Image (tube, rainbow, N blue to C red; front, side, top):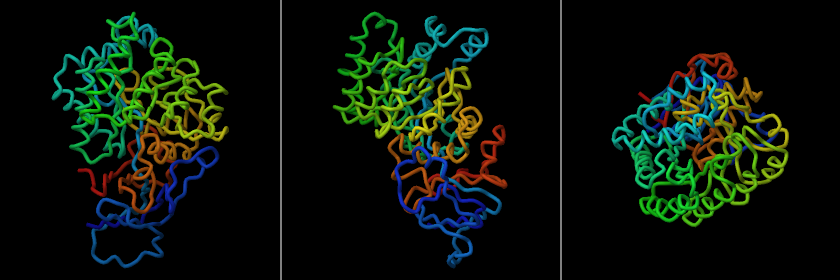
Length: 412
């Protein structure tokens, strides 16, 4: 089965030769073709070029992209899309002046989501998650990482990861699963952190690996949550089971967590609202991808990741949504890209690179997603007629997506 996209106004993120990621000054370069064509075969990108050089493809299926921009689908490398219920009450509490930490101390936050999830049947959680996944696919996401972390019990974590597996089995979008048992300490372990970490390592991990339910392991490495030493235990245990780390770190404080993550070969370090000069030096030359979550900063009014400082230092940067019920109840990567431009002062080129090729790297999908490269998955966004791709972040409140193709197939 072949499909031809022709008369493409701008074909973005064109990479003739595969690269894993872009860093530093390279992030400002977004290679493109104007007035282009792209051929899809068996769900993969077969070929592309300029319309002036287009071969005669005969009568195969064509999609006319006149006036439209085509680019790889967004690669959202950090979400908590699987959850039950919502935390609308906490949204109002924050408006009335309570901080994230104060809400957590009152039994809200992660523990509130864990209570709701453990009381909700697995099938109900799946149906709620299906609606969210279908929505973000329509918004242009073609690859997504989904974490557990709202179970905080062996059965609760397994329940979440089984839901993620069902989504992976039933939808064409690329999904990576991350085990986040170390998201918070349950109330009964508040005074005995070691016992809960033992539960994660000795009971949860073996059960998860036995069912092949996770690709990565995560921990909330933060003051008041998991210490550097505790997170290192989690990362070490994950490595023994073949689960690389993707770690929440530096959301509110900098406590040398990034150095620990790099030491343990973490694939990504996520949040980074607070970044020190020492953190930047540690990340230089490492294989660890920094990931910013600007819509979280927007929603709970905390600082934004210092993108300009990090890019100037030569680092790569990825963008993701942090889609979750408490601090970012949106999986809209278009809003993330716009917010990165508006609030983090990233250029459109840098933001699109961060949300495609670098996002793919941050969840281990660099070989298959994130760029227009021959042989990669044909998961593509086709915009409505626009004058330039700059309109994507500029018109931040408008839906500029006309069609989304996942593995070469148009979403209905």
